[in-house]
Length: 138
Image 1 (tube, one colour):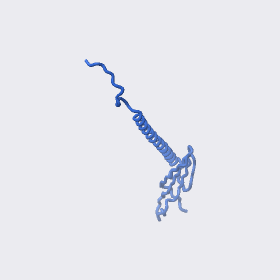
Image 2 (cartoon, rainbow, N blue to C red; image 1 turned 60 degrees about the vertical axis):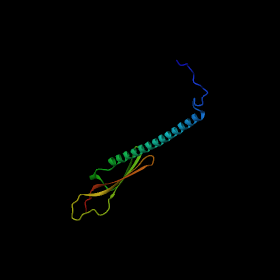
Image 3 (cartoon, rainbow, N blue to C red; image 1 turned 120 degrees about the horizontal axis):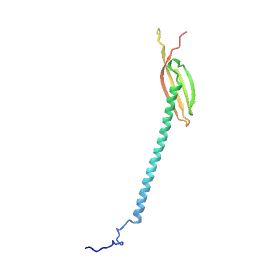
Image 4 (cartoon, rainbow, N blue to C red; image 1 turned 180 degrees about the vertical axis):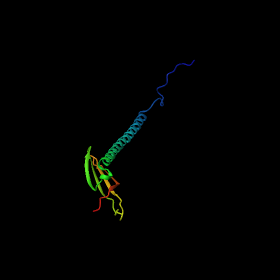
């Protein structure tokens, strides 16, 4: 059989040199820093998206709660606050003369502008057109 021999410890290729270990550690450190940077950017993006979604939900709530039904809609401004979000609703003429001579049209289009401001200062401005009951001529 073969005699049992122990590997020589004097060979130059027997292990890693200190330089190789330091280069490997530097590479690992660079990769960890890059991953941390990506994670930090991702967290900021998620927070920004959460704030935007909360603002849009507050805007949707303001549109549903602050704008009266069509038959009760009137020109003017109303405002309020809910959960720290301030809202303003402006109802103004859409523009142009919407009256048709010798007609009995009961509805005219009005511009409805809903502005919502979050506690952090971000704003949402939504404009829509609603039909408003025409004021009877005198």
